[in-house]
Length: 85
Image (cartoon, helix red, strand yellow):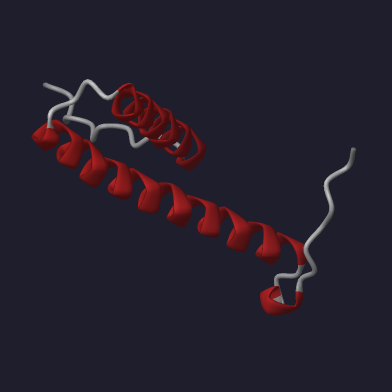
């Protein structure tokens, strides 16, 4: 008997965020290099906007998780914390 095909593993949110951020940084570097055609620049800009929105959503989700961990009964009242230096 053959094993059932497993679904492709989805990357962890942190790894997905890191990958998107890395790709965004690479896009910016190529665009700043000034060697892309107009069409390539527009396509890169579109991709960059998508990556930016994805990263922003991931950060918002992470912030919500932290707030829920700080006060699961009232996440809206959780106080931001200062990083230790």
